[in-house]
Length: 247
Image (cartoon, rainbow, N blue to C red; front, top):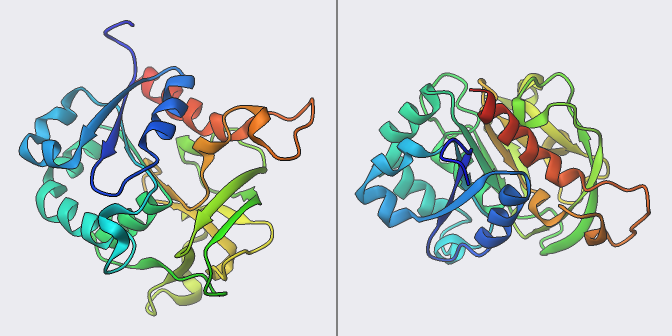
């Protein structure tokens, strides 16, 4: 592999369990997937210097014992905020999927409208009180110019979560910025505010989503496979790799 290849850093650690799946998605999109334990990154934040994309995978980080993503969010915010701010200032990309999305919202990196890392949104227990494992339809918000979303079409994607209900803080209410919404559920499975399934930060460099695009990178993964069906999940990762390669 060329030294100039796009490198995607996949965060690993206690309770994270979708890291290999996410690494496969980035590799399939043409990136080099590097796996990095959160403790090693805290010890040496400079390990991000050669990274183009930082990914927070799904799973149950620290067992979700005091709320999904809460402990990992606290650790990253308190030890890695300056490194992540510098990383984004260099135009790098960040993605958080499922537990990774929960982590990014609880550390304040999403939506981070004013750069203060305030906790403005969260993912709470599904409205029906049960864990949901299903395929859902997603609508792309074409008003969001994020490089992660470039030329995407509406597509199906699997979800698997117990705390996926998106809620904004009371001071945001119905005024959550339309341009920061990335995906909406076609049929809302968990009670999320305005059917929101994923959002970005203001720059568009940071994407968080509850559905698992890394679980739909080949057509055969879809339960209703058709000959003309494309694996739309893969295109999200291809967009990130193409964007990073042009920089």
